[in-house]
Length: 228
Image (cartoon, rainbow, N blue to C red; front, side, top):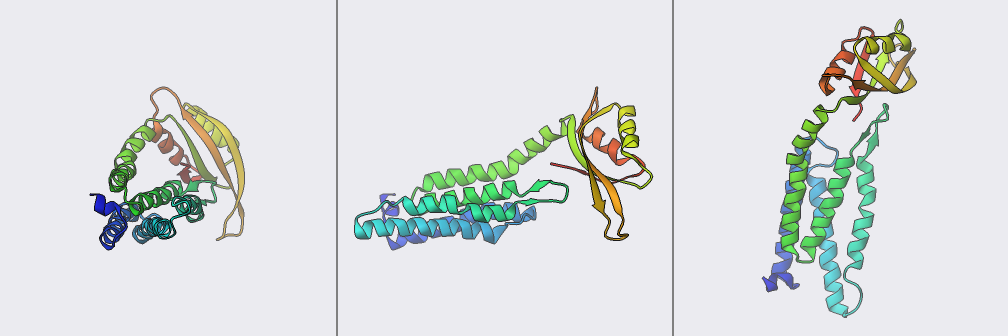
């Protein structure tokens, strides 16, 4: 195993291949879910980080001076610009892409581990990241469904006022808070429609889905979306 940690042609081929495979595995999971960064992006991030770390080790061995971790540190901080590009804020002020950005950063860390020859860490770390993106998402969804408080975005029909909406929620045993009123321009008619963002809390036996269903079934309320 020691020969694979030394800088040789064999170790370089193994490191590049492993970075290629681990980055691809994580990228496939993201690609299946149609995220902004998919298979090729994750593979490139992991491969690039691996190459930087191999280059850093080579420079250190060649000149016998310098800090071999310096270039790796720049990857850790520099990958932020790529992650930031995957984070978007929708017109409902809903943030998307945080998990993708975190995955890219984690993929870069895997590449650095492979690049320096720490194969065990790269393999275990890659498996852990994949588990977070798959198994833990199922657990997160189960927890999310049990939450009795949700935040929604909704557009009101012209003849529906905010007061009517609040009365409807009160009648259905749902309390409201953090109400924000937005003038939403309709591109089809050119008219300004009223939209709201509000936090809803169900009482008694009402769960997450019950609250969302009640909001969706209100007459005059359109484009109801849960803000995650």
